[in-house]
Length: 479
Image (cartoon, rainbow, N blue to C red):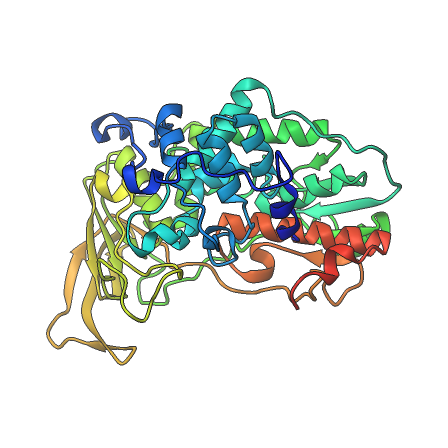
């Protein structure tokens, strides 16, 4: 990724731009991002987050303390290596276009990350040692949104074209980032997507209340203008063989994601009304997009159980609430995290603490240390779930005697993660098959959007190096 070179490259006067208010982090408190009122937002699928006012963003950006070692943009804080202190300083000074340039130096799609990333950068902020971190996500969003509003974001065409052709399989954030980087270096890029629409899980798996899909379409227009070609409804292994791609293209990049969900192997799993969370979310997204008229998986008037306590489970809660569920209960087999960092989880690590999402605030009961034992029902569908309480001792679960109970359920959604079937690569991101590369969730397993974009950019470096014999982008990487 070689992002460190960018950090030292910026300078309006051959040196770092200094903080406009060196006491900003002392004199101003953190201003939390705002959400639309619950009573309003649960009536639609529009984004729940509200953009911060520029005056507020400038004050918040001024809280950046110009620390000697900015952990926010190390791999611990941001896999992309985003140059956060630099664009914080520029935003604080109202120099929005320069801030946008620094933001785009490491991140192809900041309007996605500023809405979807859980912000490990904020957790790694040095202010976390004694105060509240900088609102990095809000600042990032304001910078990129301002860029689109002003028309500053436009296609970037290469100075010259090469004769190299590259196939990218998958149009999620990893595939799109790789495609854009390679097209800007003059290569001819074709992206293959198995779905009818582009965007991968950004489009199909992320609810619109977290990110509306016109944001994806806007970036796709930019990629098309930069020369990227797209072919939809093409499944690798069915509609096109990998060997054929290798014959027709000089290199192939696999960014197929991690779409196989973990299943719940308990009696009754076959009952009607028991579904994978992603199938449920995709169904609603297709209706919102107008791709289908009616829901197949509707929570209206039902008792909904969400098994799994992660982000996907939270997305199911928000979706079920908007569909008009009678009740929503989320079950997690792990212990409830502590409210503050445990000693074994020090800064700047990602803190394993109790978190409440905007979907949780909208209405759901959360249960911890719950083990699912048996789904019950008949041919008409699921009616309940037998569970038991467990205790965790030395990292192992122990059932609590006499704790078995039955929870009512008309709709059960399984949100316990995705199978990890990583594609092995070398440090160039190339597989054991010459000229075939891999990146994103396909390579590292289901992870954060910042990792997907970072992986896509790194794969682009690897492919470019392979095609041009230029190793400068690879030799600087850690092995």
